[in-house]
Image (tube, rainbow over all chains, first blue to last red):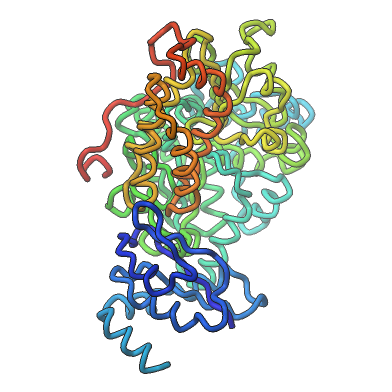
Length: 105
Length: 442
């Protein structure tokens, strides 16, 4: 199972936390907005990637799980972006999500 | 089938254009003229498969993106089936490229063809709501015509789904699909981030089909004459005809219906092949399109396969040839400034990059460029591409890059303090009034 990073450019306000936590995959442009490479998150960086996504103050950075090539990307995306997941993330304070993630790991 | 359509065999109408616009030029078609020419509205009543016919016809969206029409229809049908939610169909006549006139012209001359297409698309996906989104009030001639057309159809009971008219704000992005959905839901006409796609979850959460008004007019004809008839003009890869807005040196827009694959030479040169100099430049596809030197453009044909070899696209069929006494850099700088002001300002790269690119182009245009100006533009172009929620930054970059390539000789002239532009009168149409408050987006 590999994961990919995706920025919602409308939500992103350029706080830059993601680039601090995951410099291997995210750098900031000259205005402070993240440039994310589209590669799957390499082994060993999953934890940092999850931390970066959780630390985003506007929840603009997402980790998309791709379960192999058997499923169509579009279908997969929409299922991951379904409302229940979005809302539960939005309604929970960021720090709380982050702590839960850490506890999980 | 009425007498009129029986008399008009497929061969007669095959290569005869126009198909969409009235034959006798400028006389708008009312319901009587429309049915006399095209016959009754061919509802399928579950007997036929319009989506399959559209796939066989190879019809693509005529709003600019050239996305296959049947794929959008299937996506909406799938989503409606899975979620048991009736879809909404929207005819998009926002026509926000300032140089384009083809949608307004079509709605003025042949409103019933568009409304037919809207009904057929609604039937094909099982929609219970249909909306025609255009400049109803701002272009009040078009608005009046549409209200009249809808009343005519109501009088004879032609429509099965009621059509609502909705006003498109005069913004460059108001025709972008997600912006359109946001506006119709009562919000500002600004793009939103996908996924979910609007074919799955669009207006008020319903699966939403948005098609350009010209596309729907083609749908209305394919439903009547079939895919083979549609393919009798155009190229094998890009069949059919399309409406183009052509502005030659005098700047007056002319809307013509031409087959895809038509040589640009015959479109750009005036009657008798006169009026186009090889040192002129051609703008293809509007302000999200590309500049090309006329010498290169005349070797190409009007289809994405041919234009793609020069990095250009058909877009919404806009072809402009400014007269030789205008400076392409001054014209481009004004248009890029307009594009920067029309950014919704939601995405950081677009918000920061576009005004900087516009300012740099103005520096080049007025002959005050610094040593690093061009390098800056190229770097910003790279930084904004693909990083917006919509394609506004990408289209703007295509326009800017093509200008710097096509007018490279002019750029070096400007560096030496010279300019070939003798007339200061702006040629490219730029709408007045940038958005200042949120109200301007609603």
